[in-house]
Length: 437
Image (cartoon, helix red, strand yellow):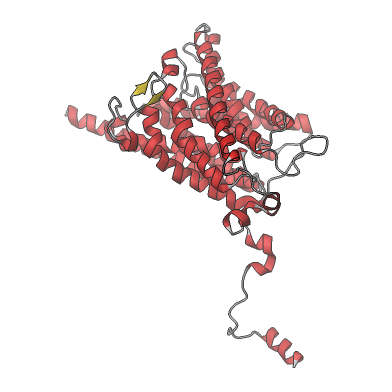
């Protein structure tokens, strides 16, 4: 009986992690729609292709290399040294006794960290160079950061806390996106002669909003699945803190943009929702409902200020990836040190947890900035990372992929053939031929 109950418990956990994995998998559709909607129509196919390759190639690379680097036997608390191709782990105990379901959940996470970079480098990066970025992010940079905390490395030993990835996933992707945008340079027309930033509107707010809501939906798997146990009360609590923070982020951004600009900003409100979700991800299980509400409200304001500040620095981030995932990833991680019910400074836990959080943030920012900056600089010096001015003006779709995301919009009626020459002529054609004769 005990063996049967244990097997049932394992099977229930596998099913639960499967459902969470599917929700996180769906987030990639959200990233694709959001990034496509918030950029111009002439680059839509390129955006979709980048997201397709980030998920598919990134998942394979993480299987071959990244998972071992993240969860293999630790070398000085810095990175794993075995378990590549999911073989010959020496110290790793898989979730529910199944390395397959464990990897599935972690694999879609890895691709999430990489796809954040796509938004920061949108509309002017060579596709081939981006593919290399996706490989390095899923094979090296993200797994090393993950090894420090989730793989039992030095940050974990320090007491650093990151429940579902405000730092491990989002800050890592946000910093890499910032470095990519910095090395690439701004899009043509982004800044006027005086260096003042100008808005370059995305081609579809509906697509951007759809992407945001898909991401919100998927976040319930992202955070809920990170419980890694079929613990109903804890799962319910995590789902509620996640929902409160995301909704609060959208509300505060909408109101703040109305006060600041006189209008309710649709695109920024979408980013505010995501900012709240990023903010709660580090401590969704550690803070109470009030803490989640407050981090969402704060993140919704912080993201607006961050987007404007990064613009003024001369760094062109088309979708606000560095602000949403980087800046708000820092906010959410530090928030745990303040608002964690068990150990947070404001709950009488002292400063130890807050100090650990600050050290973790600083270490990840430094490592990812140096590693990703070196990666982009090396790509720039070798294969090149930016398309030509002509290609950027005409759009990456046709030059990088030989097609348009919206052929009829680009080519008008010439986008589609009228039919074979032997096709029977209609009445109008016959009348024209008769008049010509």
